[in-house]
Image (cartoon, rainbow, N blue to C red; front, side):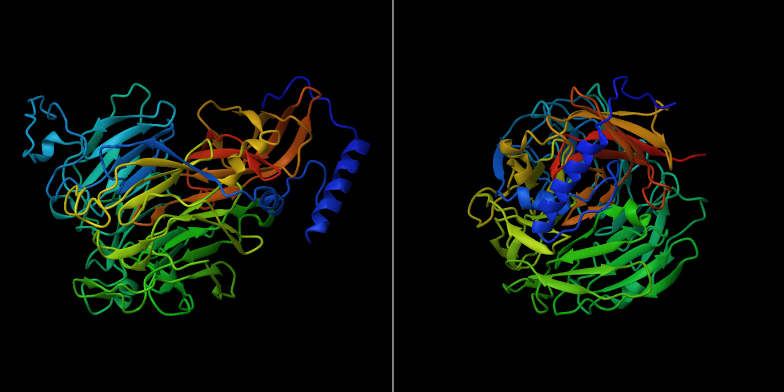
Length: 578
């Protein structure tokens, strides 16, 4: 049995109807219609966008993270794991006192022994402190996912690390560390992309440098090998720096995988190993995937259509002639963004333009359902610290329902090649990294290695909205370990006033690297009933996602969004029924 608030005094029907009438008048003034019953959730995205018209704020958190955030992952323990490359030439900004074997590291200015420098750290969001992690083998240009248990799985890299599988199991006691698995990938994987599958804790790894194939981990048999994917070969250009690396992968709610490479895309059945459909080529010139390095998201899936509509959005990239053999021309990047529904039978890219050109950008889904476009440059391409110029200092906020961009407050720190951004539970976006390439270079280069950690506070975090912000959110179910698919569970929270277009979103944190947020996913859940007591406590009954193809099993950040203003997120785990 779900346990509900004991003092549920339901708001009178007359008062509720009056509130709905006022809300209808307000929304109609902005060209929106209102539908639903008192206990029905509302979209709220338009209302929230109207209210949160500020520019946001930047805050410097740390001057030195020790390592470049080439890869960045949020854990369910409210920490963020950062790691870069153990090679070229092996130095980092965090010198260790002892190696893993407990032998002492001698502190000399010329020492570049890789085992005496941390190349991964764990950052505590609450304490604003870091601790070093031991990472061995070359991790540069790797990919990863997050397992059902919250364990991070990282695969591939370059050189001696290109077939390695590493795991990091977050913990409360602060002594957990990276571990290598004995089993290895079938093929070397650098610049590949990973995706969590509906199968429990199974990952697909797609592509890589001169790897036109895919494989799975764990393998069902020791005899399993990689499987050819001709689509990757088709999208490969004639020179080594082709733009088909780090392909964009998204799990459709029909169980198939959307794969985008260069400018083309397919829907792929990974079970039968067949291409289900070829989508239209994305209009315009240029390319989108690495080293052109645009970015991609699935827009939030919604319970109102049974999570059946799946829409992909891709923004930015490099010009057609920006890349040559071992060169990068200083050409203006792409301004265009494209949206396409990948479910159903009609497929067309709907194009729009960002305020300015952008590449090496990160796209972060916010609890409101809006998309934050942050980091990157306006000219050139990815690949080396000097390849791109004209840093993109202003984040953009994209409102999917209105199809409109807002320009937010600029940072003063250039976030170029090898920078990352992740959403954290309090609604901020942490931004770090930049230019670890060829060692930690701090002088005599235009864009030096960047070790500062910042937080961007989107407009919804402005104090003037605190009276709308849901407080003291807690999640309750009849199971201690999580919520099973299709089951009901309750969420308690406190509001100062009456609920205003309340929605409930859940967010799967991604493995972020090279402008690709692997496995990033957001859903708007169905609210069955919502009751507010006279002391401001609200009890809502929600329904979990129906199945794993909609939301792969694991930990999600649940946010209560009231009038476009989100709460601090709480972790909920969705589990297989069997």
